[in-house]
Image (tube, rainbow, N blue to C red; front, top):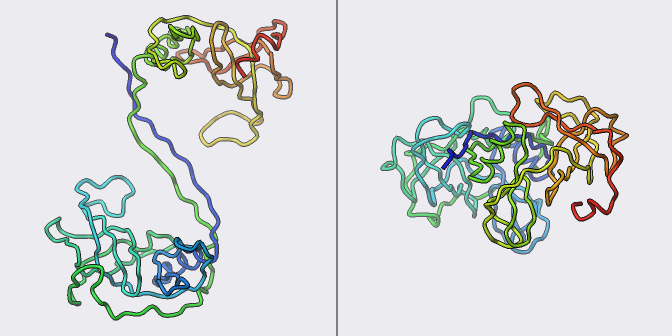
Amino acid sequence: MPEVLKAPLVVEFPFTRSLGPVQSAFLTGLRERVVLGVRTSDGRTLVPPVEYDPVTAEEIRDLVEVAPTGTVTTWAWNHAPRRDQPLDTPFAWVLVRLDGADTALLHALDAPGPDAVHTGMRVRVRWAGERTGAITDIACFEPYDDAPEGSGPDDGSSAQPVDHTGRFECMITGIVAAARLDYTYSPGRAQTAYLNALAERRNVGERCPSCRKVYVPPRGACPTCGVATLEQVEVGPSGTVTTFCIVNIKAKNLDIEVPYVYAHIALDGAGLALHARIGGIPYDQVRMGLRVEPVWTQGSRFPDHYRPTGEPDADYDTYRELL
């Protein structure tokens, strides 16, 4: 059996969002070493604060300040910290009910080992040296030995939340969070064969033994019939544009000038369309039914783009089932 391919893969993008009045006050407060919660109509204090009561769904904006000390309600030991986690040495993930709060905040606890952590232990915030208005302004929690330990989340702490306006100078109104996922991708038997064929400048799909549809790229099984697909079928190399879109926003690390066109292309003999970039033609001349062929670059394992073949456009009835 041929070797199945695998490779590291990173999915990464910046997530930008604006903040409402509650989250704006909470993050700005962290920058000023103030922990804010929000009080519900029945008197509960939620930390971190939310904009709508999770029980009644009513809007809540009654901000209060709680203490930077609290009690561990539950925990889990992280023996191998990963990139961008709060600490680069082993630590505990903890849920901490801050004094004055009725809910718990998830963060890291800096402790020498799992034997030093237990439910009911008292902890306090360790503030970051440089604070920007983010949850990372709390660098982590640390054991708080100057206060008596509680017995759990109902330790009877006398700390009471204090009303707060939520107003600070230079309020934080938006954040950019870097979303990233690192993992090892293995395409499996069917797509390994497909990728190896692409390296030979061939498009190979697999035919369903039941409905006879040819899947490109192959999936190893027919999603409609639920049976394995083992019969390999070479398709293309030419195909027909079924639908397309014009891209007007330049992607990071992609050296293609906008606007450009991405299209669904039904390769000759395939039972469904794959997507690829269209080149060799002005973006505003791309159309449904356009006949295209792959363009390969030296040493590439896959087509760089598709370009017009010069053939007459395909009749709509020949590809309408592939839209």
